[in-house]
Image (cartoon, rainbow, N blue to C red; front, side, top):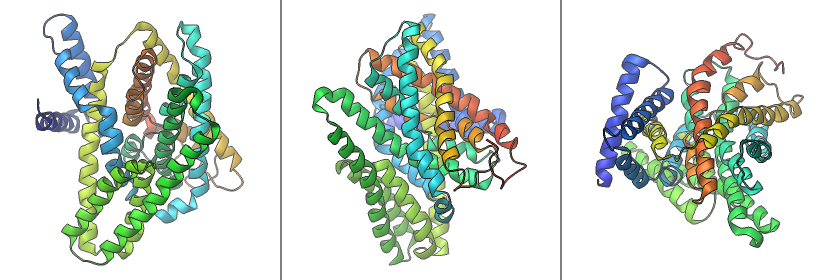
Length: 419
């Protein structure tokens, strides 16, 4: 199959699943599309094992050609993050900057350490072993909440506005932070004795701060270009070039492209929207990026569901994945509770913040993509299986019940958390 054939098939399947979900099942789009593709994947595996049709080999070949980790991390991610950041109010984000910063940076690092340590302790009880480095690598890739999944669910969940900004802001920024932490630990695992503490610190600072600065610079330059003309077709192309071209350039400069995309989206979505666009341009850009966001989300969650076909599943690996679900949830609780308790006097958190943020910390395609990028070998297969089971639980169970959890606390929209 050619690249065009694969794209055509993905779009057709995504459209068919979206129609069935909207018409009959009526689940949140992310949940519905992933559930249907997961069911189809399991049916194909069953049919293949019964010997009726040998289709999983063909499906695996197609999925390997798509290469989810490369497609998402080096393509779709920038578009999805930019589209998500485009509609975040920077004024509200600034009001919650302490909470978002603590959750996105401190929370992600703390979660990585807790999950890594717990994985190292728990796996030997199951007859499995991973080195400390690979346990921390698993902690790094499963710690960031997925902005694609989170923002999609937030559209239908009733949460206090301050909590919504905290969840959205954290999910947008901890994705970039999580990727940086993952790459740093991957460098340690791959580099062995050649990796020094100074080299690790330099890599982290260059990726994280470099990505923020890159996003500010490219976003501001694009804003100046938008302000100098009034032609929505050209302005739309400029934002597209900012996302796609900027993401590619950031990767060449070895700075965090995800963080760059988020910051650029905030600049264009606030300063650019207020001072650089006419009403006509603003309307077209909003509709364009909303449409792109919906299409890519649909394709992504269909792909995540189908990726189960590629898994080399063993009983012990499945058991480990099931055990990791409560471990990841517990680590999420700790990584949310610690920053919120530390900032209790400086930031007013809505009632139930810790519980909603814990349950709303959805994992999605980014964790799967990072897991698939782990070097081949036994650790790769185990990490991918554990990641996949945590993601399935996160999207199908947490995603479906987040609205109910949020509604338990919706009677007090402005109060302080009762943690």
